[in-house]
Each structure stands twice: as structure tokens, then as C-alpha cells.
Image (cartoon, rainbow, N blue to C red; front, side, top):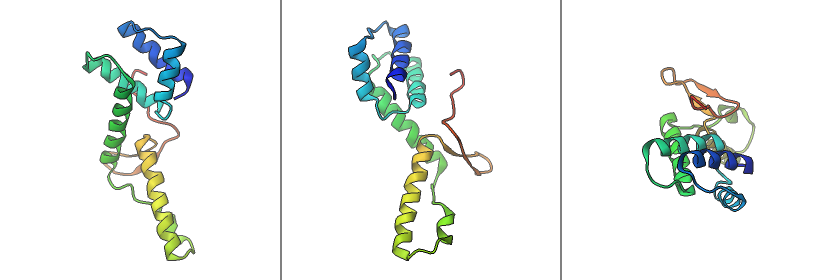
Length: 136
């Protein structure tokens, strides 16, 4: 998350729980959430305030985003690999490495919500950005 995204997130939290948000808090939260997707973090924060009376901490967001990513992977199923790999003229040992790389890249897209499957047809769709939650 960028500093501005963290400020937006903490401002939302402040409006609910009256926490103090200054430069020190923003800097600390920015470090803790540096590798966190802002859209997913906002989803987790909304859910946290809807379902919990616990004081919101970075760990709630980090764990919540991991749970979202895990749920996306579970719903997607086998991420597979890019079938175009088999049209490439490369030695078998290189093909295995390319397949592993392709699976990892596709898994990352699924975790971020950028590669989804339609629930009924199971056809894949590549998105330009993460899907926005309703009301965002």
C-alpha cells in the first residue's frame, strides 16, 4: 500500500473508533502494510468493523488479506499453466522450469483477484485491476 492509501484506510478507521492518526502512526502502518493490496485491505477493514469489537491492528489486515487470497485460490481450483508453453521449442528441463514459473504467476494473479473463473462456466477471465467491493 502507498502512504496515501494507508492514510485513507486509517482515516476510515479513525471515523469509527476515534483512534489518533498522525505522521508516526501513518509511517508505522505503512511499513506493516507495504506489501498489502489496498482494495483487499479496505475489504478486510470493513469486514472487521462489521464483525468484531477488537481494536484494529495491522495483523488483522495482513491475516484477512491472506484469508481472501486463500479463498480465491480455493475457489479457482488448479491454477494450471499457460498452454502456450507446449508450443515452444525448448528442452524438457527448461519446459519444467517454465511451467513452474507459469503456475506461480497464475497463482499470484488469482490471489490478487486478477484472474477469475465464472462460477457456472468455469471460463477464465483476466481483469485489468482487482474487482471492487460493492459500496467502495
